[in-house]
Amino acid sequence: MYQVSRNTYQRGLSLMEVVISMGVLIALFALYTAALNTMAASKKLRYQNLAYHVANKKMEELRGTAFGLLPSSGSISDAMLSQIPSGDGSFAAADYPAFSGLKEITVTVTWTEGSTPKQVQLKTLAGSGGINP
Image 1 (cartoon, rainbow, N blue to C red):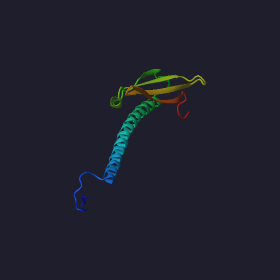
Image 2: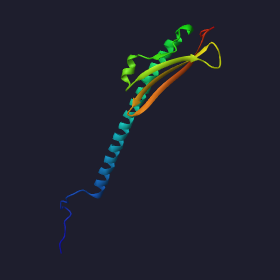
Image 3: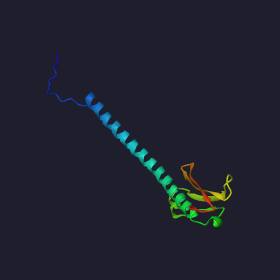
Image 4: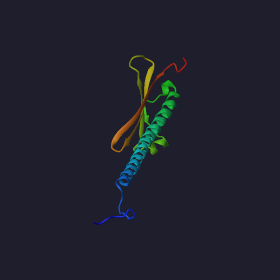
C-alpha cells in the first residue's frame, strides 16, 4: 500500500482558485466594457451639445435681426461645425401660415455618426412688432 504524506507538494490550482480567478477576470471585463460604452455615449452627447450650441447661436443672431431684413434662408458657417463629423447647418425664415406679420424661423444642424444621420432643429416665431411691441 502506498501512502501520500500531507507535506507532499501538489502541482496545479485548486478548484476554488480557478473559480476566484474567473470571477476577477469577469469583473475586469465588465468594467472594461462599461468604460467603452461610457466613452461612446459621451462622444455622442458632445456632438449633440456642439450642434445645439451652433443652432442656438444662429437663432439668437436671427432673432436680433430686424423683421424686414430677415433672410428667407441660408447656410450656417461656424467654427464649431468643424468639430462635428460632417457637420452642416442651415436656416429658413418663412411666413407663419396662421397669422400675418409673423415668420417661423427654423435652424437645423446636421451631422453623421458612423453611417447614421443626426440633426438638431430649433424653431421660433418672429413678429413684425418685435419682442416687446
